[in-house]
Image 1 (tube, rainbow, N blue to C red):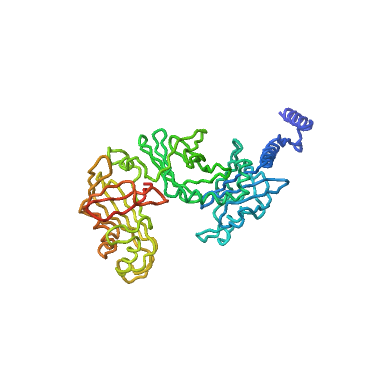
Image 2: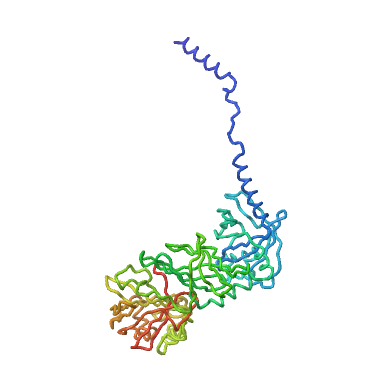
Length: 476
């Protein structure tokens, strides 16, 4: 047994002494640098692509105010020349700025603007520089470092590293560059906003009804409804105006519907009007621009007629939508004066919503009154100083009277939830509720109330002079 043990020891020692079997042998990692080479080649390819465009790039970069637009030209070296559409600095309309950039392999290939530039202005923490209307200290919640998501058809799609904002870099044309130098990046957005402010841009595709409105120099209100799918949605959309002489609108984020994606709006220079939406598959979807409201029935959207699934159920009154909201109640100032008259305090801001809803299988019309900013005495004890006031909900059962439009009669009975009874007893909401209960109304698209912030609807009645406007809003 001892001899066998010794033989095994000698055999093990023999193998340990063979070349390459010692404990101090070199270990090859198997990494030959190919991964680093591929990353570097990718980055170098991106840099070459950016520098190769003879007319630069049209860059759309998102902020909390919408997509700002820049023209940029990269190179030689690490230099970048840019123009901005930032009208807060309209003195720079035709003034080029020179900065520097870098492309680095961080978590993903990343384009970095590493010296102060027009792009830095919208990121500046000083609200006096960024122009942040809210007075915050984070700029306009944009970025100056962008990860490359993809490159398709001469377009870079990127995402900001910090705030995750979208950025789209499109290769510019000679006409783009000429428009930039002529100051069109700053001039055209306001011209388009002013000309389309009160118009609906409408289209239909695959059972989807689409409405788009321009609501500012960068923002859109988008609405679609598909009756067959019982789906609908409203959102904030974004646009930039092309400066190549076409006056087309470019949507940095496509408008997404169940049947089609919209990427822009085509302008016909011969008829001087917008004629269709560009789609993601390169087609043109015919559109109409009209001062008239949509022609699809509100009853379809609310779903009470025909037993459809209710998708949109909220109507919101916005201050300034009309000169008055009926009777002797004049705009929101009346609610503020009634708050003071009731001995409560100062009402500085509030929300008012009209809801069409079903409770325990019964259709109801509900009014929600919600003070947002106020200062005064507690609503119930009348002695404690407070800045917080409870919401109130008034619910009235309704009877649908017509199948071709949303005509309904409200009950005389009002269910009051929350602080509703207290506000009613103290004459804050009394006049409004009395103008609604027991009356018959027809709810339809508004012709006499215009707003740029959404689709306006109007209550009309032969039983009362109370005709409040409202905005259609999402029900989630």
